[in-house]
Structures are given as C-alpha cells and as structure tokens.
Length: 237
Length: 112
Image (tube, rainbow over all chains, first blue to last red; front, side, top):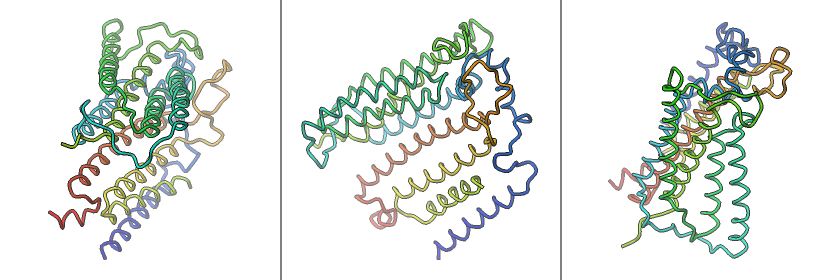
C-alpha cells in the first residue's frame, strides 16, 4: 500500500514537471536554447576571453568569475571529509581492514607500476585545466583513484595520512591567500593580479592555473583521506 | 526529449528513496536522483551544432556556435558536492552496520 502510494506520488510529480515544462515559452525545448539572452553570452565574447586568458570557458567560469563560489564548494568537500573522519575515526594507530583475499606478488608489483601512470595522468589533467577539458576536480579525483588502487591491491598498504592532512590544509590556506593577494594587489577578492599571456599557452590565464593546482591537491588529498578512513578500522582491544 | 528522460531518472530515484528501507539502496537512489538532475541541467545548455566551449584556434569566436558553459560549470560543482554527501552517507551507513549488524532500517527499529 505504501509502495503504491509512493509510485503514484512519483508518477504525479513526473507528470506535473513534464506538463509544466512542455509548451512553456520561458523554457526552450531541447537544443534550441538562445545564448544571446543568457548570461553565458557575455563569457563567450572575444574581449572577455582575452581579459581572462583561459581557453576553457568552463574553467574561466568555475575559477575566474565564480572563484569565491568554488572556495565555498571546496569547503563543503572539506566538511564532508571531516564528518567522515569523525564518524569512522581517523588516527595513525588504526589498522587496515582485512581483505578477503591474499594479493600475490604480480598483483602488488603490477598495481605499483600502474600507480605512477594514473598519478601522472591526474597531474597532467590538473596542469592543463585551463586548456583542455578537466581541471582540479577531475584530476584530484584521479590522484585519489591511484591511491585507491594501491589500497585495494595490497592488504598491508597504508598511505601516510598525516602528510595528506598537511597538504590539504596548506593548499586550502594558499587558496584563500591567493584570493587575498587579489584583494591587496588589485581591487577585489580573487581578482587576477598576474599577467594573462596568450590564450592557449600553458603559462597563461594568470592565477587560474595556480588556483586549479591548489584545488586539485586539496581534492586529491581529501578524497584519499576519505578512502583511508573507509578502509581502516580501530585496533581491536 | 532528453530532458524528459532526465526527469524520469530523477523521479525513479525519488521512488527508490521512498520505497527502500535498506540504507545502501537509499544512497544509490540518492545518487540516481543526482544524476538525473545533473543531466537535466546540462541539457538546458545544449544548442544544436554547438561545440564544447573551449577555444581551440586563433580563428576567433564569431563563426562558431558554443553550447552554454554556465550549466556545465554548475554541474561540475554539483558533482563534487554529490561525492561529499555520498561519502558522508556511506560513513553513516557503515556506523549503523557496526552498531546494529544490519543495513535494513526495519531490523534496526526492531533491535532498538
């Protein structure tokens, strides 16, 4: 009975949303959006691109125009990793969860060889965040996935979780300091104070690559910390 | 039409959240809802014949049509926050399992 009610309510909601959106003049149908009456049209003009210097417009929105917003977002991720650490407990004295299998020699060596490549790809994606699709968030997650590979392939492996915590704190503070430098050297918080350079060069776009590298380090160390929290447990007394 | 698929995915996740009493299944339903919403926001910015909003050559922007980059930037934000909430929810699920030895909320209520 309860399930039937839930099904009925969900279907009603879906029908309501679809009826409200179809034939609505304020909501363009799929693929027929007109960019000229949206905010994004401003971001795509040649003047704005030259002013920020980032070839990837999504990056210039996330880090350039909405850098303060992204600072809040990184804080949300920090708070959630703090919550996970509080719930599961995170001290250096904890030991690894027992895996149900014994990893053999080939698995351990092979995963270590693969670890370097995954880490390098993550770093590449972070460094080219202002030129190609990607950036700090996907690259940081990729670094964390290389740590996860080591955790899953070796039942004795334990990352140095304390240095991750330090890296996370330092990169988070540097993010705020870069923003404050914008306030001091230019006019407002998070403003670009470095030379922009030519669009498409690796060393271009002012502070955007610096901030994205810091975001990548922070996201990577935070998610690695979450992985460590999930795969360890308190020592049985 | 893709927009309606995204809405159906969202409602499917909502239904799963209402019906299931298993904590892990509830987390999965929450993630399905999130994917539906993300797809919906992305689809708002799509333009036919539009390309990804990345400047690839010095030809200028006048001749090319780009898709709307703002929804993509917002979804990038939403995905990361989704990862954070999922990690927190799974941590709560793990502590429930440690305390009550089950993931099912009905069984948890019986043991309390």
